[in-house]
Length: 372
Image 1 (cartoon, rainbow, N blue to C red):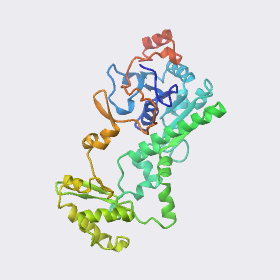
Image 2 (tube, one colour; image 1 turned 180 degrees about the horizontal axis):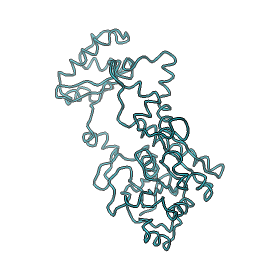
Image 3 (cartoon, rainbow, N blue to C red; image 1 turned 90 degrees about the horizontal axis):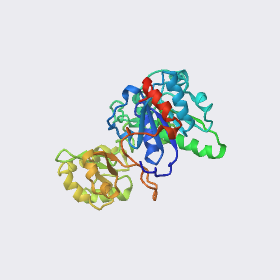
Image 4 (tube, helix red, strand yellow; image 1 turned 90 degrees about the vertical axis):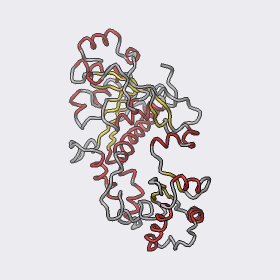
């Protein structure tokens, strides 16, 4: 493999295999040059490359962490690492002998990132859960959905990925930055319930200030006709985000609806929505795209994922890349001038000697079935 590129070049990350949030954090770090070694169960490692987007740019080994030999091998790897990403329920890593205290004993500079739904303490900490549970208890889910409808989860993007994996990656970078001053690592307690709550900071303030009403009645939650989606004649959809007066004026002028009632009076919203819906249904999505081409009306087609890959803007920016015959979103954000990291699939040969596990030890562990 060529030398790693990007701002995290030289940073070594041990990622304990788990569900989406942990691997996503590891992907974010690998995308920007970190050398990420995914440590999976022995039985899970095969000779064929994994085709999971979140494994791109990583290497993978299988290690039996329920055996003393596997734990000692993991400690050797951790001794030469900068970061560990751990995704177990609270207390599991300690019982295995690879908790923060165990690993800081061999590497005080180690950044130990812990990814859970509920956090390391609190009444819910030992309980199982999923994204929908975490965003429910954070309060965020209560705001999502249309007026008169039930709370609607936005797939598992809010808890698992935004409030979980992305927050963990952010915490890792904070701890690495702090380590430059202190010389010591830190434990990160990244909980999806905390992350989801933080993402909704503006809305918590709005509710307390009386500026945000019931679900589905507000400016940004489909309550307002100028921030919603509308169906077209061919079954497509358009996204309307003409919030500012000048953008709204441009949109209604292009639609020939300059006689609409005052949008600043929410009592007029039902009538405005009805007229917009009727007008949008009169033409196909492509026809409306032509109407709004080059305008600041803030009207965009709702593209499928296949369409998004082919869209001229995304193609011009290289928003998507091909990896091992599959289309992936490109690493983000972009650091201009930095080289692009290796995005090849995870399962490739690895020189474990460079990680502190010499060839003889690795061979002995393979013979015992502890290492794959």
